Length: 358
Length: 75
Image 1 (cartoon, each protein chain N blue to C red):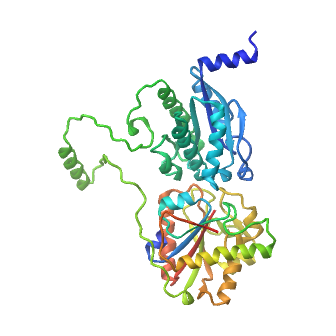
Image 2 (image 1 turned 30 degrees about the vertical axis):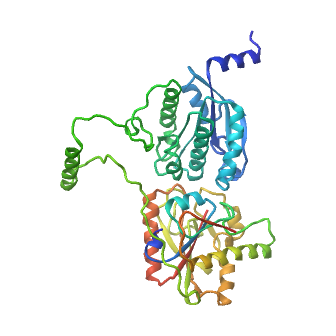
Image 3 (image 1 turned 90 degrees about the vertical axis):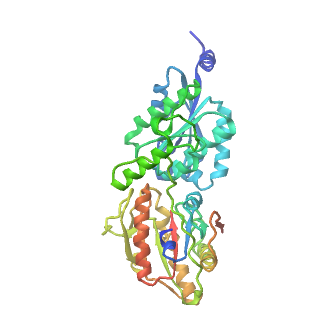
């Protein structure tokens, strides 16, 4: 009967050491109330890492799962990543996985940042899985393999299967095909390939398809964020009307406009005095609302702004604030809500906005 | 960004500055925490108001200045 020590040594000799990173929720510590928790390490695979373990059981062993709260890492990204790297270095992995985080913003940023650091600083193959619109995706897709996932954990198995497959091939030095073919986000590398049709013909064909309204596939994808120059500064603060806008999801009791707690598409105007005077709700499941419930000024700084208005520091505080919820919202929805709110602000003659985001 | 597009200067206060900068926000203040952008429940109410005022003072200053992409203020 082998001793524990011998078994560990055997596993180290013949199987890759795999380390996984998860947030507090997938690491089974709790929900938003545990989002401030710092790094901790659990032996073996936890949660989704168990499926990764079974997918890679021929070749590797998940020796540890590193868990950290989403707020802890997102609020202080650089320092937290350094902390995480120290921990991961000591675990000596040959392969690293973070997430998948789907469209969860803070978690996606964390997964991307940690995987990038593992890849760049430790030279260890690192793979994560994100919904293409996850803010973390743009930050890390050029540094690590980011498997394209669905919008939520309903597609966990598909995501992990692809992540495991890429991980296995990276370690075995097997070739990985193009982003489109393999299902990961483009990494920004140009690889020369010989194709039958010359570029000039492909270009004209694409243009003809576009003009005719037929589907076509671009060969070069343009980045998605519109380049918008900053608005000009306020000329006269003493006459300016300032309005508050927030994506923290604050709504009157009963949520009359049915703002959604995640993947929201709705914004609504509410009277600022009323929301402070009457019971309100937080229609946003992506952050723990205790502090906002304790004092709404922490999200909508009305108390201080009213004082500054009375002192004549600026013209006036607009009596309506614009509310929506920004939790795993798609870029398209953000744009649409933003444009809607913007037009309303313009119509109302608002001069400037203070936008608070959780 | 959509609000700025229509020419209305906007200061965003958020703890997750990386995303804001990625999207192109040019008047950005780092929020205190994710769950409390302009507040701190550890402080006594009067002290908290003083802290909140610092954020608002900076926001009002920034509304009167040119926007600066890729940067943020920490209070």
